Length: 384
Image (cartoon, rainbow, N blue to C red; front, side):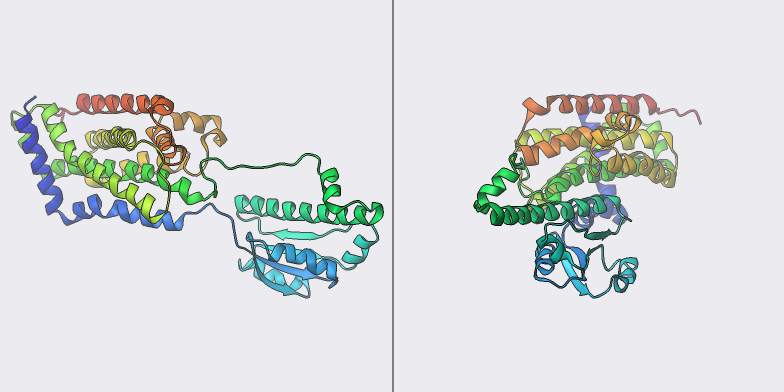
């Protein structure tokens, strides 16, 4: 292994990247642009749900009930309506996502100690949002029932309402959110976006960089030279690893400064894990470049093996335990899931190598396996 030859190949590749405008944009601009687009466009928070209320009762109690919803930060009151038929078109054109319909005699029935039915319409075209909306409605309705029962029995028994609330709710549920106290989805998504973007950018650059020489015929200079396979591959890939590490630093800074995600872990451990992950993803690009002969085929092949796994099988949107058995196996066969665990642990949980050594070990094994496979598959004397 001649270091001088590796340095020359790496410098030549660097010059190619800087000179080619398309490559320069792919290497230095696209990763940050993807972080901006995903970061501002992707949110799992369900708040400010557009809501309308139909109050057929118009009593003090019905208005107080409606106020519980309109005053909540989870709902954004669009309008009151006199008839529910007025709101059907607004649900169809997505102006509204939920409707509360308070029946006549709502207040009178409650004052008489009788139950009453409140109807709720929820737009079910997006099941996750619909189920979350149902949870909000159920929680507010339960709180109203508790207040009403406490007031009713207080009037009957003379006991203070506070004491009656304790009797009616003997088991109180206190929820404490750990690691992400404000439950901001962007705090969870930002570290995983680093994983996704580093799964996309380095393989594309690596695959295109090698295949470009096949298409132009420059690869025959390598075949005819005294360069060994290892020297060529190391010199070829080192610039992409360095560029990807620079992009990782920029993406981390954007997650911290632009999206406000906290970083509580060990920076050195996270940097080392990121380097292993980048080596894995560049190894994927190397394997693709060995198999295909054109840049179009390289782009299509890289997209298939990186985009879908990074989004669907990494735990970014759907938690791994929630995947089907087959999908969970696929997730465990890909490096994205392991780096997502490391990124989330470093950013939000403040854990390091003691807790994440197994994920780090898997990434290291991946890096060795991918580069070994790429080394064995690349030949200076191709079959055709």
